[in-house]
Length: 403
Image (cartoon, rainbow, N blue to C red; front, side, top):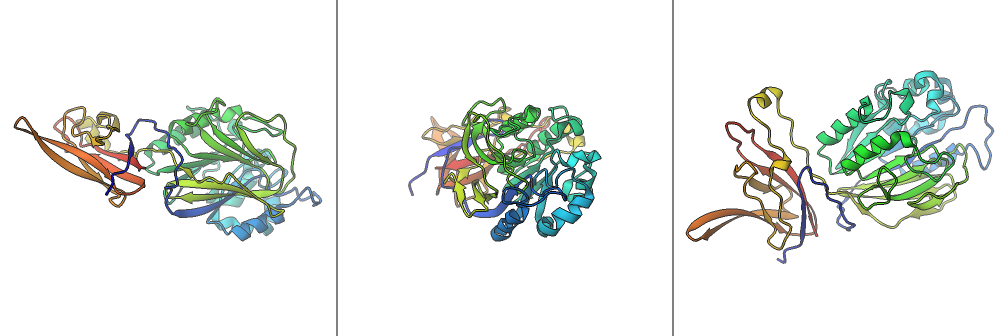
């Protein structure tokens, strides 16, 4: 069989994935939208209070999960308004909804109505962030009401939680969502307060970010946290079209690819190693970029070692494995930086395999490890060694893209 080309990325090394059709099978469908239900005193019209129409789209899609992107119940998000307005229509999806709060929820002190309505689904009521695992995806619900939760900086409670969550995750793909968009061409525009969260997500190669707040749909090309267009940045979507009303765009921001002023919902397809996005409007139209995106290449987190053991020996990390060749030989390292022999194995043998190769040069036997691509796709490898008197055994995850 002809061997396929390989791109290998080790832990602690940032590698940007390139577009490919090898995203595997579809694992779940998400519906996502924010800015949904009008104030109880508002009068429905063709341009306002269209939450029933967007709910009908949710019913038609029948997603596995519904991500609601804040400002769910206008104007102040009281429990009474949630029960009288939101629940009769959107409450049908409550069991499979993953919510985040918007600024209107905090117009009631402590967003009490929001937390009372959602209960455990909203997370700790002093925080408003949590994580959910869906197949190969980690879904990160974040709270962008920074002034109400002690800030959104790296040293904030949320920033530290996010960093730890991403560092510990073995999910190949990552999606984050909150209310206030980092980038937007809408009325509110960019939100600088969430830049530190974007920086953390970017460093861990998060795949996409969803937000609401501005009442229109906008799709952005990959962006770095500082607003620079970059292939190594994060794609994002503003989906504030849930039904309250629609607003005009302002000056078009750099990186904006698609802008739609219609009521509707975002539909996100989650695949084993990729995703797709489209916007379905209440007038029956659908907008999509026509691309299934691959998740970024990232490595599996090393397992946590009990503190008592760490005290006796030094832990080895992914950075302790010598760099992997990506040349024609496609050979894996046989020893760690400390000189310990490494054993490699493939967890996805249908996609690739790892062969132990013994050769003799000038009468001396040498052992090497060779990666062989069996078909296009994503392959998971693991490097292990037995450790020593001073070093813990290494158990390091590596993702290989077979092309």
